[in-house]
Length: 218
Image (cartoon, rainbow, N blue to C red):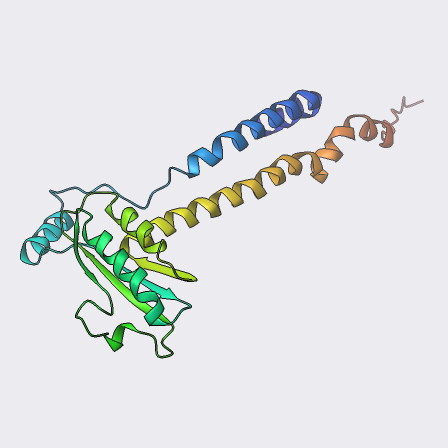
């Protein structure tokens, strides 16, 4: 069988097999990080498909873009106001942004956008339907620059990026942990150890049965 031949060759040329495995492992560790950095949750969209036509019909009926939401936390709302309003003005000037809402967008503070203890405020950003790629990253960066002890950002754009990052991190960790195990298992397998010595021990440890005696009839 092919598996038996491969096992026999591996046993006969252990050093070569180990050297090849080490080279493969080194190449994998060098290539894998760059590969996982290219992961994305974006999928190809076929305009002529049923889902593509439905998506286009929904967009024509009610054109809308994505949304991002942020919470600036850890400081009284009055102290956050200047930094939040400055960030809102900068974000509103970014092409592709349709609207920015803060607790002070309507003049008087909106209690719905302020935490009950008064130490956090919410910001909402809505994008145009034709916002260019990368607009969400620019807005996220400006939101995170708000002068607050902690700024949490969520929404469609942020969710996609975090999913990509988490998937890449999980796959890289899985490969890092599984590769050494795969390398060690062939050499640590009991069947391999037994087969490596079966050629001599089996022959020397088994007695041959005596051949039957022929009667000459005398």
